[in-house]
Image 1 (tube, one colour):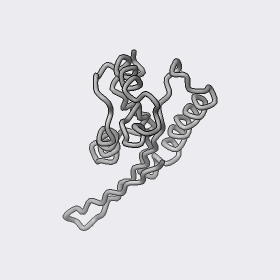
Image 2 (spheres, helix red, strand yellow):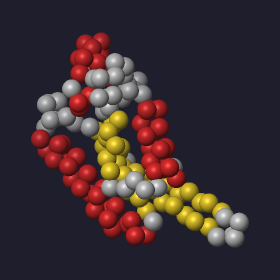
Image 3 (spheres, helix red, strand yellow):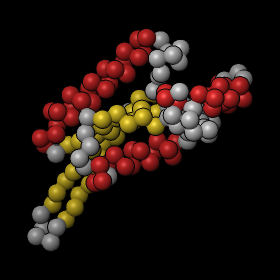
Amino acid sequence: HVVVHEHVECREEGVQIVRHRLIMDALLPCPDSGIPSHDLHRINHLEGLVRALARELGPHGVTVNCVRAGSIEVPAEHTVVADHGAMVLRQLERQCVKRRGHPDDIAAAVDFLASTDAGFITGQCLTVDGGWCMT
């Protein structure tokens, strides 16, 4: 997924400044997560793409970043996963933050990267996973 955000600011002199933010997202596999190596390779390519686009588009005032989401609780997982309770326990054992991630956690990261507060951040991949890959 790609989010393009445009922020327009009007100054007293009548000059408009347009800031562009390009934010990509990726599911976050950890090396020992059982994710196939070709998926890990795909993530590395995405991070390389983020850095390459940041270099190319930075001179034009565009920042490019990526949000790597960990395990986020969604309604569909309750019907897809056979033993949902056991899966949740396994995930929480690995994480530093002992709660499931929610879509709002990812939205907050994207909102920050799209804001003027992140105007000097580019070429980065922000991990939002409750410390899942640190353990």
